[in-house]
Each structure stands twice: as structure tokens, then as C-alpha cells.
Length: 73
Length: 412
Image (tube, rainbow over all chains, first blue to last red; front, side, top):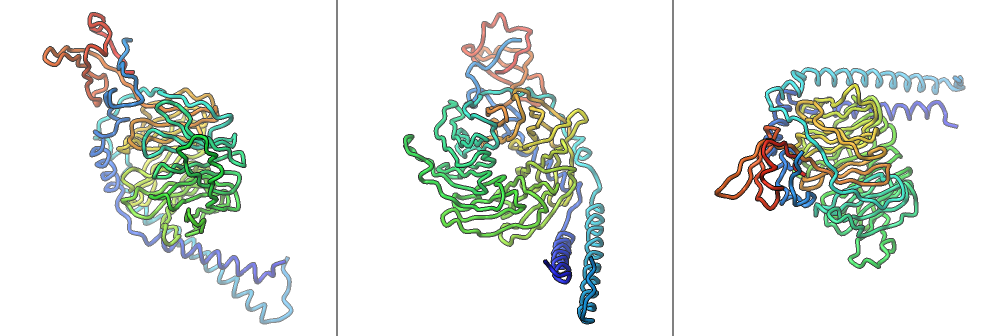
């Protein structure tokens, strides 16, 4: 059975860890959301052409597609 | 029960400890408020607002190209080999299978000593696979070219946790493995010696998923857990450097955006979310009122424009990451989708399900209008969606030309 003093020490150790962790998280450098989003968008547009699931690629280049490339609806 | 101390000194010490504790708790609350304040100051706009000027994507039609049958129970995890054609999958049936996804042939099969193999990963070299689950371990199996060789004989036990293994991933070589566990920790291991290199403490409950940052962006990884938190870690120091707590339930899957500046998460709260690491906040939610079942797994297409989510209602929803809208829904599995990964070259994605199967899927799209190019002897199709490339085909690939005019065509 832990003495109440040992309990308090444990709680203090945990509380100290939490405070230390929060200090680290609070101190990081941040940029504006508008700038962050602009960068996400420019990455998308730079790489869009080489994204097969986005742009589609010819059947001959896709090993999963059948060689007969279209059906009439 | 308050025990009255017999010695006056102890009473003073106890009071001092209690005061320190209260002081720390106050500081903790102050820091939390400060953190929210700092984040809010930079929250000048939403992602979908910035993305208003971006062209919309229209609708996609997704199609299953391969169905991999062979597991005797729920598929729990899968991973692609870097060769873009092999897949490793693990199941509640205790088996780990390596498939050739082009031919659907099974190349290797290992029977684990436990059921519920919840995690599996392909080594970067393609020469080994790692797996584990209810055995609380992560083991590495070198893949033999000899089909008759018993893979289990060469098994190497690498990681040891005190609860189930939920996820594993090789780092950028076959030499190190990162694991996450129901014991609330993540850990980095040396494969050869089985030595623990670094452990990561900070989650308050089971850790369910992890993803390594793309190699260009340095030594970090993100984890998600039952404490609803997504934590970003420094692999060298073991330090948690950023933490995000906006989900309302367990986080089942986390995946880095291809640039490494953001990551997506999927949760039992039926939403996917995007967190930007440099803005240090959530920047988008992908949800619909009609979607009420949890997300089990998420992954991005190569450019980061599409986010694929596997859901517990048996569907796959595909989201426009920038605009926040859903661009496709795929049916086909007959039970929960439990795992989903886009192939290394981005041409397809694979899903695993509680229906015992895996599927390999990609998109097909619709064409209207056809013109014959006499010089090249090709038929040129105009796609219905303006952002899709036109298709040019020779006659050998088409039904008779007389049937083709004024029709809508679907690429297979």
C-alpha cells in the first residue's frame, strides 16, 4: 500500500511531465493557416499531372486495366 | 481516507507537496489556454475557402480490378511492396499472405502462432515482411525464393510489447521497425538484434496507428490512439513535439500528406480530418450527415488531392482534400473495410475487408464525342469531365466505327 506521500510524488511527477510537454508544444513556431493552405494547394497543382488516380492514364500504361479500353453505354 | 500524520514534519511536507501539485495543475491549465490562443491567432481562414478558386473535380467512378480471395477470416491489414505489384495481407485467421496483385496468385503464406494478426508491413527491399497482433510481438519473416521452404523457420522476433501490436512499419531500410501497441506506447527496434532503440510515451490509451513522415522531411512520425489524440514524435529523442485532439472518438488511421507538411486521420467519429503541421492545427474536416459509421483507414493519392477512406459501413469514400467535398463512393465489399493503401506509383489502391477479401481498385471515367484522326488512324475521345485527359485509340481497340457516333463511352 502506497503512502499518501508516495501518491503525491507520483502525481507531481506526472503533473511535471504534463507541464514540460505543454511548454514544448506551446513554444513551437507556427505559420498562418492561409500560408499553410496555399502551400498544400500548390503541392497539389504541381503534382496533379503525375497523379494517375486523379488524371487517369492510358490503358496501355496501367497493368491493372484490360487492354480493351472502352465499352459503349 | 486522510491518515493524520504522527510526526509534525510529515504534515508540513504533505502540505508542501499538495501545494506544488496544485501549482503545477494551474500552470498546466494556463499553458493549455496559451496554446489554444496562439493557434487561434493564426487561424485566419479555412482550407476550403482558400481552395474556392481551384477547379472542381467532378465525379469519379471507381472500379474493382482484382479481388484477392484466400483468407479464411477477416482481413485486418495490408501493405504494398515497393515493386508496385506485390501485396502482403494479414488476417484474423492467423495467416499472413503475400500476393502478386497483377495475377492474383499467392506467392507466400505464413501461419502465425496467434489469431488476429492486426499488423503487417513489407520491407523496403521487398525481401521480408513484418507482422504481429495478439501475440504482443512484431516478427520479421525473410521471403524465400524457394516456394517449398518453410518461412516460419527463419522467423525473427523483433518487438515485444505488453499488449497487442496494432501497427508496424519499417523505416527507410530493412534494419529498423517502428511499432504501436495496445499498451499505449510506440517503439523503434533494431531488426537484427531485437534491441529497443527508442520508446515513445504520451498516449493515455491504446495506440492504434502510425505513419512515418516522407523521408525528405526528417525523422518524425505520427501516431493516433484511443485517447482521441494524434501525436507527432521526434524519432531520435522520443519527444512528442506536437499533439492534436479534435476527434471525438478513437483515431484508427493516420497518414502523411505527400509533402510531409500535413497528415490526415480517420476516426470512429465518422470523420476524416486534415492537420497542418506548420500551422499546428486542424485545417479541414471530411464528413457528411449521411456518413455515420467509423473510418478504419485513410490514404492520399500521389498529388495529395484525393483522400481515400475505408469505412465500417462497407464503403470507400473519396474526398477532394482541398474543397472538402466527396467525389466518389465505392461499393463492393460485403463487410467492413479494415485497411486501405494507395500503391507506391499511385495507379491503384487496395482495400482489405472483414468479408475475407482484398480488392485492387482504380477509377474509370466517361467520354462523350469522338473524332477520327485520319493522319494517325486514331479515334480521339473527349472526356465528360473537363479535367481529364482526352483518350486516343487505334481501331483494334474499338468496336466497329459505325456504332460509335453520338454515344457516351466508359473507359474500362
